[in-house]
Length: 256
Image (cartoon, rainbow, N blue to C red; front, top):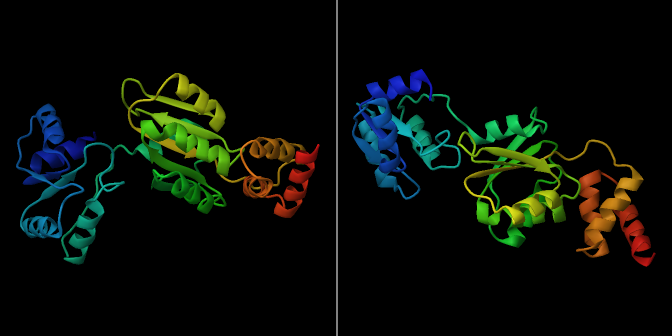
């Protein structure tokens, strides 16, 4: 936590937070005692209205349970309405799991897309990955430990050949960042079930067409679980090679 953030918490009039039980631990560490107002996913429009009314005459700090407020939490609605109402808003820089994961992964970070959580349902998860397949940037998602291997399997199916990184328990005692193919990571996490909060990163779509030999390898891998048409489509997305040519090659490989 920055010195500036600690100073703001000491000088503000009240603190809005996701879970008062979590925030009070931070305040005890800082030696701060302030009124705590709950503001989480279940906050209603009336809750925001009351909070905005207080913010017209009081300095209110918004604190998240972890990471940077407003990243994958409901605070953006409060900021949006505060700005519309002419209430001044400022932001204090602090920990951000997506950015930290990028710095640890070794994947390209000059361009990245943070896309929140992958859907929990298999079909929706694959559709989301297909939608983002052509984005020439590192893809960054939040993921839960119980769904990690399912997400990695979907990446292998929809985006074959991509490098993947799993950043887990960032800034905590058992922090790790593991990179490799989806298959390698599935094998590891099936043998060592993951715990804690996870950031899942996928390397960007290739800028150049792959070597034909690489295309054959990817096709053979895809044909193990997919029809020839689907295998050709997924390898085309991963390599930039022509889909029709890949389909013809897939049929040759199946016949051989």
